[in-house]
Length: 222
Length: 80
Image (cartoon, rainbow over all chains, first blue to last red; front, side, top):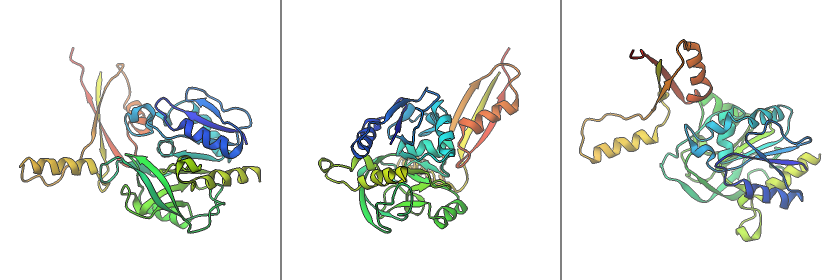
């Protein structure tokens, strides 16, 4: 699998994401700088890492969403290449318009940093085929702006189309309907606030995130 | 010429920062504050002749996230 991890100024989970991808796929991803305008030929998976791109200036993810590489990412997403945005990566995807809604300041105003219980609501996606439907897992979160909001019609559509992939099982950040991760309408772009790359090996104390990357490998190989 | 862009949360969008400011004002003993909404003011120094459409484009493409925010543009006459 030929993966690419996009690196913005202020990304800080790019290396974690790269390590997770290499451990599961056996191949290190290309690290692609935000000023680049093209992805490596044959890229079949793109990861947008967590962090604080551009210092969260203006709005979280707003500046990164307008950086040159995001045109190439948007084109690739349009061709069906799987894209995973974690935390700040999710914020970048909503700011780019690849995913609906917006991620606002946590309702409690606090930065939340702890493992949180999630339910896998859709086990049929490109990313979640290794989980079972309704499976409960724990994945760490670490964010200040994870409060997912969209208008009621959009939320209803996301729910109705099975695009709510992960849901918080307790109160984390005020997200509408407890939404922790969503898919685009084509199903190849996933944004999620929890960090699966921080839960892939025994040393992390938790390997619940590993199946996401394993599922992705299967989907890309299929 | 200069312009100011006011970016505000749409009505009905939860504003935790405004709520926190509200609580802090009450904590300071200011009564009679019914609600607080926090927004942003962005000042632009622009080439003369920049059109309204250009400024609106800036707002739509970057300065405001129209999913959750409204914007209002105020042109300021440049002091000679």
